[in-house]
Image: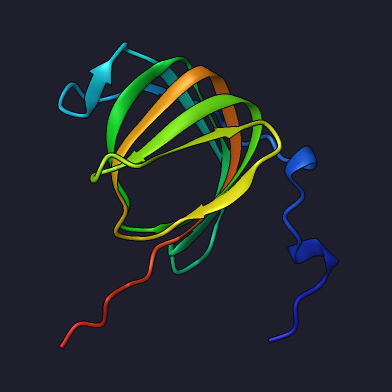
Length: 125
């Protein structure tokens, strides 16, 4: 099946809705950060998503079932694994969080990122 220019998703020409939300109480550690996501693309199989996420300062528990590529556009955050090892990420940094990662995400300064997520579907026996 051949694809064409009209099949390219150009973020700047889309009017994708911005979904704002606050974290569930059971995830929150500090603060009550307002977050938003603007999902610009979802594959037909729903395993691949691309968009923009942002959050006010605060911290919360994370448990990744998906692989996520992140490109930090603004601000800074500290990502800590369940063993207590941490990584500070700031504007300009790009990285991948692997599926299976468990820990915390703390936004130090309003953070905005481009995300690319892939959630592998496990085969049913």
